Amino acid sequence: MDALPALSFVPAVGDLAFTAKQRSLLSLANELGRTRFAPRAAQWDREASFPFANYDDLRQARLLALCVPESNGGLGADYATYMMVAAEIGRFCGATALTYNMHICSTLWTGLLADGIAMTPAQREEHMRRRDLHFRRVVQDGAVYAQPFSEGSAAAAGRAPFGTTARKVEGGWIVNGRKIFASLSGAADFYGVLCTEDKGDEKPDARDTLYLAVPASSEGLSISGEWDPLGMRGTVSRNLAFKEVFVSDDEQLMPRGIYYKGAQTWPAMFFTLAPTYLGLANAAYDFTVSYLRGEVPGEPPVKRRMYPTKQISVAQMRIQLEAMKSIFTRAILEAGPDPSKDARMRLYAAHYSVMEGANDIARLAIRTCGGQSMMKHLPLERLYRDSRCGSLMLPWTAELVLDRMGRETLYEAGERDE
Image 1 (cartoon, rainbow, N blue to C red):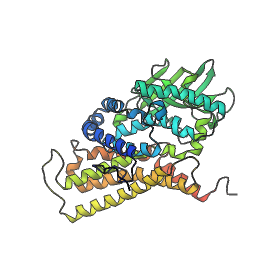
Image 2 (tube, rainbow, N blue to C red):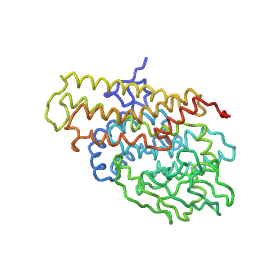
Image 3 (tube, helix red, strand yellow):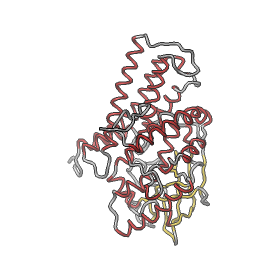
Image 4 (cartoon, rainbow, N blue to C red):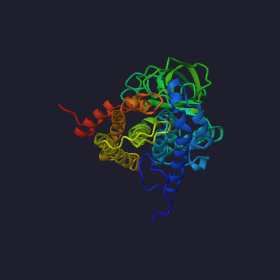
């Protein structure tokens, strides 16, 4: 029997059989979210400014090192634990949770995921030595890593080589190219850039993808463009340009070719955007319940819970939220390298359900709470805008997930129609 004390709240992922570490981390995330992140969320949204104060809190709480192994001084959280914590943060500030994902993935991919990817002994030695450097920066210096991915082409969807290139030179690489929707632009200390090795006259190949940490202070790195989007405004995802940027060999986050292997064997590495939106769905539901009960701080204590139409809407929201939590939890608990076809389909289904379901719950929340919910002094209209952005996130947009599911269901590997 689990003798651990019950949490004083129900986490965004639901009430599960958490480990002692998970309970502790979820409690910390909930405390920071309630007392620090939620009160500031409107500011980042209004100004389209980066949540630096939230990152100061994450740094002080050691949560920047959440997925750094304990042997490297981190908290040693596994994949499922990170996903639980991220959902809890997303409940209080979507922009913080989404950018936090970019940072954490830089440690998760090079740590836990890389441990499950086949490497030669030489590659493994190289990787372990170099990742120690990056982990040390996070643990000792509180460094923040970004993960610019998109380029406006098929590369981010995994259907073409990245247009950003790296040419081998003595002691390192010369990087040229451009990234768009680059979250944490101007806020990160290092940009974990995915690029294609430039081998001269040879045709670019996705198998030659490199994963390099480009220091923010690098000569030739520039940030440009306006940032005035519909939602997720605090991510400050402006454009990055790389013009003859030199990056030393030790800045490789993975050895040559290992990222490609990871993308083929660890599909759950692309599911890490989803917890932000599960958190937002919880927030929309939580607000609706509080509003109908007349318990929203600062608002008149007017109860609206006695109307059958309101009761039915809340029931519909809860049913959809429970379904999202269930498939999300199943997916994160079984995540690992080389999943079965059934597990892979379930992962796609979980991603789609969360990304589309979050906005559907926010839509029901606005309809149920009525005209007052449109006002910007209340969080619901921001939750609605933020939640609509989930289905647009590469590499698994809602459209691409549907495409993958349909094709991979009807075709086995190597099958073609004559």
